[in-house]
Amino acid sequence: MNLKILAALLLAVTLSAQDSQRDERAAKARFYMDWSLKVAKNREIELNNQAVVALPEGFYFLPASTANYIDNYCGMVSHKNMGGHIVISFHKTGYIKDSGAKDWDADEIFLSLKNSTESYTEQERASVTFKDIEVVGWVEKPIYDSQTHRLIWSASLRNKNPNATPPRLRYSAYLLGREGYVMLDLVTDMDDVEADKAFVKELIENTRFNEGKRYEDFDPLTDDVAEFDLMALIDGVYDRKSEIELFVEKHWVLLLVGFIAVIVILRKFSPSNKSGVR
Image: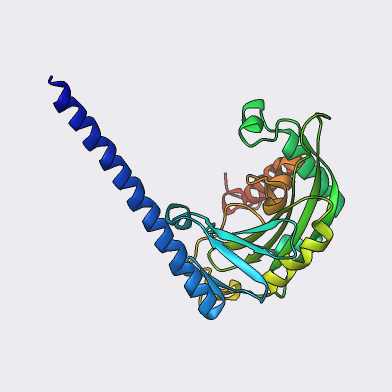
């Protein structure tokens, strides 16, 4: 092939790629600008047509890219006086039952959280940067308000490798809705968490589900129910056995004996066994 022709083709391909990159950057810039103007105008962040965060004064919002916004991640909020930042997301999991929260024991939950963290396989742990991470205590014990349907909790982490960078801490707040939950996930350092968590609490108090999407709007006849309980938002155990399953596992022998006894009694008093019937 003629070198001039080849050079022209390469130049065309290069210019086309550059144009594509420019278009992509321009599209992202327009997206961010649209969001910024919208937030600046009414100080509200809309979350997947499910909920709204009314942004208090002093906070600023950086939206996710269009691709991420379609999924769970909606954007990031910070404040000029914060050491960390708050990631906002909506998770369409179905309605999460909260009836078990009244019986929570913080020590039992911590043990479950610690065990579930340590139970990752080496491959899984490496993929989520948990290879040398362990849970060492509560920063804030799980608190669930059944009136507002808000959950807040945080655990402190430690890196087993003394030469590694200390892990950043997560302080998480959740608001339950009819079809899932909103999550405000503060990412900060241990030195800043006491000051930063006040901003999370202020933000979750300014978060509300839309009419028809609220927790109390749940319709058991038509709505999907999550396949996990509320505690899974803390310890990550999404296949926890129900109380009935645990009872059956523990007392299956007694249940079997009882079932056999019922069959014997029914047969004994059935019409075919009455006196005179052979």
